[in-house]
Image (tube, rainbow, N blue to C red; front, top):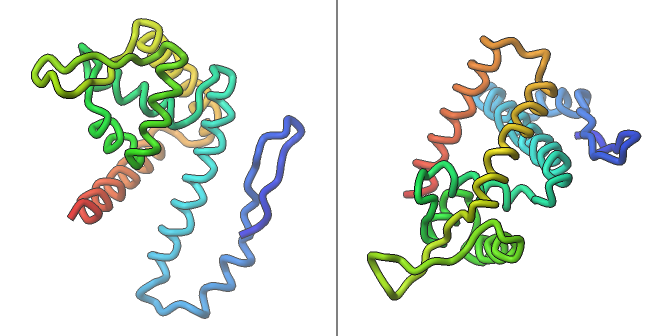
Length: 178
């Protein structure tokens, strides 16, 4: 699908090889034409967003996993805590991946482990005041930057894209959790 390229700042940019995409058409039956479009375009957009977000977060010494973990803890509401298993599910990571993410956040002073008041045998992950502040500020930075990046999409287009991606994510979540 084209080769990945770097711009002058060294940031990863993805080339779109339309010719390669068109070459798939004769190989597909009509029933798969739009399915392959959904698959290819969502994978490409996901890779592009992940690379862009990674670049945006680097200035805050965060990676995407750390950012998603902070956001999940923040968005769950006060007291901004949950089990490691709940966090792993919310940020779509394996338990091992979530453990590594949590360890990085704990070492940065953004998250701490606290005793579960309902079950003394387990601990919960909780945002520290520094972590709460980082989650709020980073969301603003990311939204402002992304708003600039997708500036060519008007509000109606953004709403349509958001609704379609949400529907796809919900559909996949329901099917994959069976």
